[in-house]
Amino acid sequence: QSSLLEETPQSGEPVTFRWSREESRIAILNTSANAQALTLWMSDGDRPDNVIPARVAVYLDEVLLGDVAITNGFHPYTFSIPPSLASVMAERRETTSLTLLTNTWNPSRVLSVPDNRDLGVMVDRVEIQ
Image 1: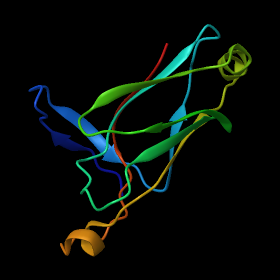
Image 2 (image 1 turned 135 degrees about the vertical axis):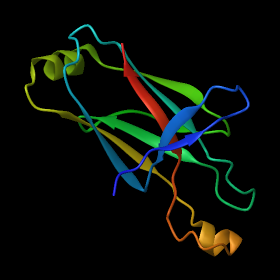
Image 3 (image 1 turned 120 degrees about the vertical axis):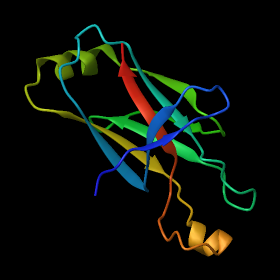
Image 4 (image 1 turned 180 degrees about the vertical axis):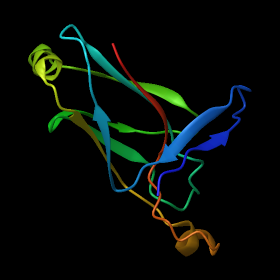
């Protein structure tokens, strides 16, 4: 099941997002050999204080680009793309996998609400430059 949700944060700009899970994948295609950075706009989704803080490990084509703590509110998180990886991705006809590994929490168990999903972080968009 694929669905985008919309939220209007304090900035007043509506964002669409998907919740990540413990392991989430995004297909990347048609990138430049000159690509230098991958930016993800993410939020911890206002995790309750009694839940472990959100962390995301970001892999592009199975190469670890970085591991970052995610805070509340949508913010850009930028990772450097190694030049050799950018070249390989640009030559590919098939997609490259962007993988997010995230610690999750479950609203049903933590807040006693009917939402039984294991939630990672909110991902608004991805940009490669």
